[in-house]
Structures are given as C-alpha cells and as structure tokens.
Length: 242
Image 1 (cartoon, rainbow, N blue to C red):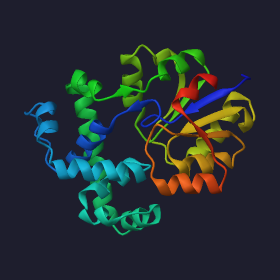
Image 2: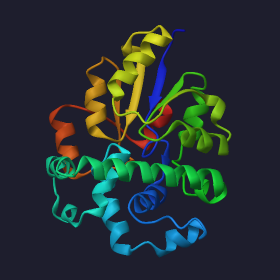
Image 3: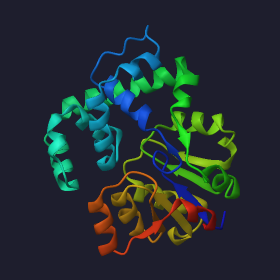
Image 4: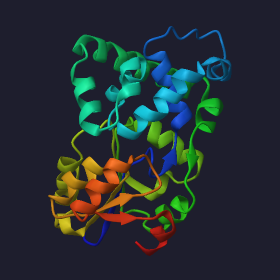
C-alpha cells in the first residue's frame, strides 16, 4: 500500500482525557470501591491531587509516569530532567503495582460504566474531520491501551477511519518504522503528530515528518527546546492542511 500515512498520538492529540487519566491515577494507589459510581469517585477526588496530576500530565509520556502525582515532591519540579529524575528514583515495584492497578481501574470503568467512562473523553475540534479525510491511512500510536482507543473511536463513529492502533506503545519511533515497513512506504511518507516533544524528536530521526501538536500538554521549557532544534509545530487551526 502506498501514499501518505497519518500517525497520531491519542490523548492530547485526538482527545482530551485529563479527568479520566486523573481518576485512574487516583485508583492506581487508592482502593477502587466498585460499589460506588465512578462519578462519585470523580467528585470526591482531592483538589490538591487533581492539581498535582494536571502538572504531572505536562511531563508524562506513559501511564507509568502518572504515579508521580502521588508524590508531593513533584510540586517543586520545574524541568523535564527533574521530573525524569524523580520518576527514576521511585521503587520499580511501586511503579509496576500502580500501573497494574490503574490499568485495571480503566478496564473496569470502560466495561462496567461505559457511558460515564466515555463521557470523560472529549475530541478536539477538527479531529473527526481529519480522521475521516485520511480514512484508511490513519494509525494511532499511543500509550493508551488498544481497547480504550477503539471504544472511544467507536463512540464517535470513527472506528472505521483508523486502520491500526499501536496501543501501550513506549517506543514510538520503532512503531513508525514498523508502520512504514508494513505499509510498503518509506518513513518519509508518514506524518506523525504528538503533543509530547520527546516523542516528536525521536520520530523525526526516522525520516518521518514529525509535527508537535500545540493543543496538548507542554511546558515553557519544551517550547524553548523545540525552537532550538527547529521542531515543526502544528496548531489545531492548521490541522485541516495536513
């Protein structure tokens, strides 16, 4: 198969899922009382925790990284290196237990409270049209799991537009190389869009056209870094042009 392939990150590019990510992060450490509706849990989350998670989201690439929201030391973090060092200092067993619990909570909410869970995901303006315009040549490359991505796309009647989902993906450059190889095209035929600057820079090394989405999660440090390395930004208003 030849032609341009559009490869998109999901959270922060296709949809805004900040509330959902905060909720499952809470359940990554705190007991998930499944007899209480999800909306009640959401309303009961500590304001301080939600604010901390919002900060963590600007630095995180993977579900594992969300565990840092449970560590008050992150309040003093002001650079990506400081965030990465704090995450690296955590006990791997703690991180693994958190990731398993958070993933289980997400699966349970998706399957047992589907309307509530789906309502926690809002598509960014213009994304449905972009997916339909590139239907059949779209791949999602994301840290989110495949089943969640498919459920959200189906909710918006967009499932048929996405040919492939690389879920729970931590090595997006490798995924782009694999995608190009299986499509029978050079990486230069892939347009990759992500709101995480580190991912964009790594994918750019494959030869793909890597665009940094400006409507997702970022910090001033990332903007300075992007300017130094001449990373191509993409505004939401320009999405129709790709």
